[in-house]
Length: 335
Image 1 (cartoon, rainbow, N blue to C red):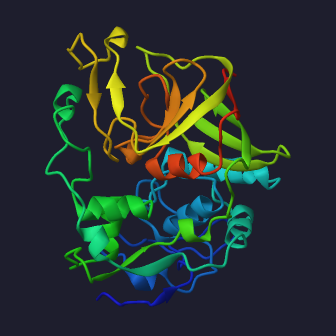
Image 2 (image 1 turned 180 degrees about the vertical axis):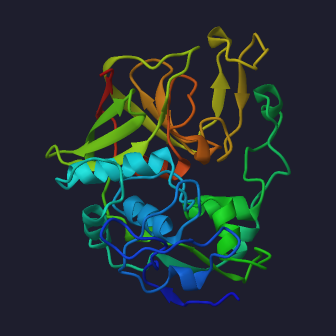
């Protein structure tokens, strides 16, 4: 039975972390509910590829602290392990990537805000605009007036950094329409408030598939999973600078790169929108035709290649765009 929790503080333990209480079976995608997201300072050890409230909590807390796990989906994927390892390094812990007891304790002490919250869907949310379908081929995408979301549910999932399946699981029976109250991840509202120019240096780690942002004092500000380069257009090496930051960009295809699946031998432009090939943000670099950008497929970030550039989730790209300005250094690391 679905039970609504108005203020969800923390997640209950699914299984035990090292040194914590264990249980044999965690909740499935079908059975997880608000009661699973309540009252937990306990630790939990999540099973790989299984939805688990402990991992949802860990992903939200990592996201808040700007050690981004990518999409919050309640599963123990590579992006989660890399985010945990980055958090461990920043906090003087062994960077195993495993959510052990010491890491769990440190992570749960990092924020006391509710890990989930209720959200009332607004008329503004519901009006879109939406498109029925995003074609797979770029040439067909160029025919659309806007590369918008395909549904309100997709838009809401991205707004709260979530996987659509997790959003559905937390809100069984909901129609996702204006006026409804739904339960969502509470990540962004509790993030530290950084401003324009607070990030002065960016490192793009090609081997780790990771982008790290640093402040004026050299302190680490954020770590994001990233898709970097491709066979057709490998990522460069060396140091460059941010040339400009563009929100809601259009995308122009250059036939010189001969991307796989694109047959056109002429330039064409795809109009703006979150499902545009470069997503909701383009951070232009002084290396010609290269940039840091968003994506229409957040679940693939860090797991597939980008067309030569640096691809983040739309929300991470927006977060970075709000902290960086022209002249910030961008170093591509080969090691």
